Image (cartoon, rainbow, N blue to C red):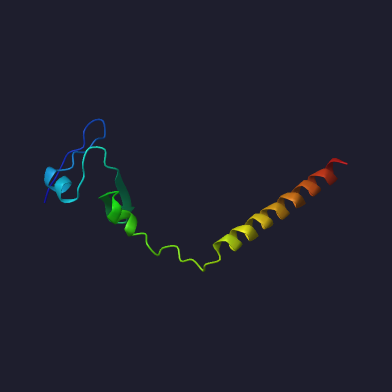
Length: 89
C-alpha cells in the first residue's frame, strides 16, 4: 500500500509507482470522485471517458426532442409575457 501526506497548501503527492502505472504525467487532469466510502482518485484519460459509453442511450430522435423542448420553452415564455402585460394594464 502506498501512502502520501497532504501539504499545508492542500497538495497531495501521488507515489511514482502509481503515476507510472496509470500514465499520470505533469499536466495530467485528475478526477476526484466522492463515494460513500471515501474518495477515488483517477486520471482523466481515454479509459476514463470510455467508462461513460452508453450512459446516454439515444432513441435516434434527439434533434426532434430538442426542438420540442425549445418549442415548449418558447410557449411558456410567451405565456409569461402575456400574463405580465395583462397585469400592467
